[in-house]
Amino acid sequence: MRSSNPVFSRRGFSRDNGTAGFNATPQAGGPAVGTAQGNPYAQGATTPYATNPYAQQDTQYGVPQAPPRGSVMTMDDVVARTGITLGVLVAGATVAWVMNLGLGLAIGAALVAMVLGLVQAFKRQPVPALILAYAAFEGIFLGAISNFVNQWVPGAAMQAVLGTMAVFVTMLVLYKTRIIRVTQRFTRYLMIAAISFMVLTAVNLLFMVFGGGDGLGFRSGPMGILFGVVGVLLGAFFLALDFKQVEDGIAYGAPREESWLAAFGLTMTLAWIYLEMLRLVAIFSGND
Image (tube, rainbow, N blue to C red; front, side, top):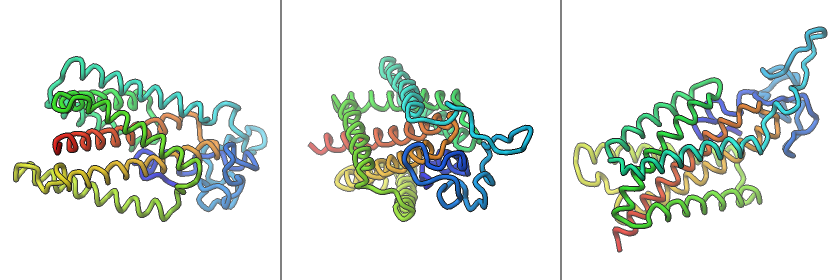
């Protein structure tokens, strides 16, 4: 199951990155591996190794061998890389907050982060330095914006952080208890909703630039609240897709370096949710 997160959907743990055929059962309790039917990464292979680029050929007999022990991704790897990436993001946000950076620098940092994110998204291999650089600039952007909003609405940043943590924990519980199941239909509908959301956001931005004011009113008043709630919900559902992708990557023995892509994708999603939370806090406070 591919995530709609651009990091995962571009490459991530899809495109046959598992070690199908090395084990009769996946490592994380997923479906049976060893055939194309059991392994979603095999994409119709007629043999367990036909589409596995990580299968190592025995130099004497030409038989695919299992990867060395410890070379496959584990949950500890994902947690560690995600912790490092989020730590860099928080460090960047702290610097921007303490230095009281202006909105001009915040926008510049956001553009740099976007470019770095796109470059990594289209890379065939994860580049840790690129991922951490993205996290640093994204942190600078979020820190500067948070400081600006916090001066207008004291405590807004902390409320947004707590809200983001609540969304993450809630979605993790809902996913682990299988209350939310990530299926092809779920992914398809979420993609349609996400594209529609982004189109409306772009149109609203154009109206703001050329027409002034709040554009179509998607960022203030009742419409702004509704739009913000939809943004948070979309981010929350993206988390479910990311959880599924990580779970499948571990189950099918994705290479260990793929944990950096997991960290990258989760960081992107959490940053999105935080930003939408911050906007909601600002709108609610402005309506008081």
